[in-house]
Image (cartoon, rainbow, N blue to C red; front, side, top):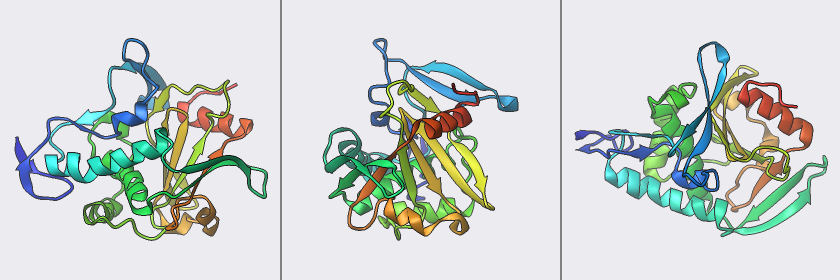
Amino acid sequence: MMGKCKLCCEEKELCKQSHIIPNFMYKDLFDEKNRMYAIQSEEGGIKQKGIRQTGEFEANILCKGCDNGTLGKLERYASLILYDGYPKIIEHRKSPDGMTYTYCAELDYAKFKLFLLSLLWRASISSRPQFKEVHLGPHEERIRRMLFGGNPGEQLEYPCLIMTYLNREDYPSDLVTQPSQSKVDGGYIYKFLIGGMIYIFFVSKNIIQERLTDVVINPKGELKILHMPPEMAKKALSNMLGIVWS
């Protein structure tokens, strides 16, 4: 059908299926029947585990040029980074505070930063129940302009901290949860849990701390993915799943 594309804002033929979270991010989450487990909240804060045949998608929100072209190019690059070992990766470094992390170098700052922003933006424009907690308000239009214009912004402009507990074999790696909103010191953050990787987006300027410059992707193409220690992973899972994780 014809309609206004939410990215380029032009009247065009719209795609019948645009993924909010790209399918490649669900890699290794599907079982032998091509199903995966997903967590979604219900009224009253109760979390429910369900089975899906594919990732979340929505019809009539993007034109082919924006979906397959603008955003598709970012997805293809990010899939190389996250799953195919494209960047220079050195694991098991330790920060001064003792936190273990995976160090990535030689990334394309603009492409990877814009890909991360596209996840947040698509969740905000979606009407799917899975993304009901993601409401960016005026930031939605600002990020749209950044995506459409290919402008990744400064390092601490909508930074995304990436953490993982995949280093711990006793924690589930086959879960996708409903993105959640949290208010911290008067500002908002959004958390996405996808297959053992947690993406934390900082939206409000007043809660963005300078120490994030050491971990989030920088213009030199460097990124640190923090490995969560047991207690931190347990607390994160308990919070995002709505259960007491033991």
